[in-house]
Length: 428
Image 1: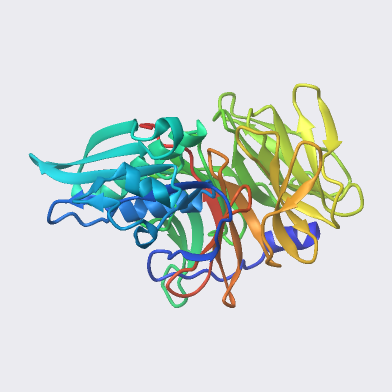
Image 2: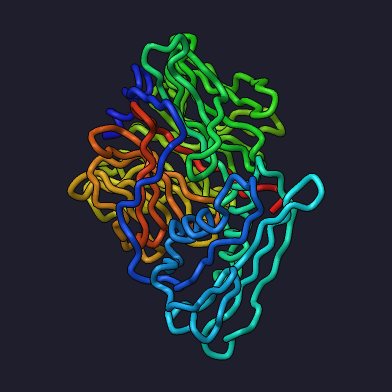
């Protein structure tokens, strides 16, 4: 399997194509989660975003919430945007979210209140927030509301204002291969780079200002680092042979990569301070797909040194390398889940599927598809975005880290792949 992955890195990669923003098709709901009533906000004329609808969708995708539709609330639960606690509580919802968007000066104010509906919290204001937003950034303001509600319930920061990167191909375009960024839900797509040759495996810097990626623009794979704001870039690796799979360390000091300049594909990292290249593995088998642990003190990678592709871990504190996965025929593409000792992998069990491996070594299947690849974990560990086949085409999909929620993000046309989830915003 790894040989096939390596070969894919030096030949034409799969076709990617999109004409418009990604759309979300929910393919699996949740059977548990906090029951929450998100009441339509009172909004002044001219507001372009249905804030409550965005909030409800965000919370649903996290897998932690089960928003209640307005049609499911008892009659009389809401009057003029105000919640009737006694009536609404009959729905079984734990809390109700109410709010309003109103013009104030040259901007809009977004205000929301979370009110308890059950037990000792019944009738109590659990959260109240107000902030300014331009109409053009109203979706981000809605995501901020979702972030605060998520944190209120889980104690973990929400990831709804994060962005993703991915690669697409527009067949027939003068520069068909494009490196794109978008909001986590597929809105606000922006082209970062356009090329006549394949682009692969983007990776975000921890501050969200740069992307590392592989480009074949010179008919051979090279690793670049590019500023998102200025589009300026630096060539990081262009050694003879394979230059692939760049991965930024969470502390921002290093970029891991796979190079074959010394023979077999091996794991290296580039120290951004000393500007030195450090070799991590030295094995007769193929080592590839490096990905950092959450604390930047170890690298997970895929290797065939045990016979078939499995996940290994190179620990820079103990200076040891150990095998991590044992279940399943093959395990690939390890990604650490922030805030936990678990990792996300692609496991070959009746097809290639996204799975979570917990600290005790058990593997929990998150998807039921058969050709999943390239997983990337949200910075708060709540969701996983990955590439899969949907309606006969390669596209992106999201699954919550507990497997409760699943959705596909097909493009307007064509195929997209190689997703990478960006960091939490600096102004959280």
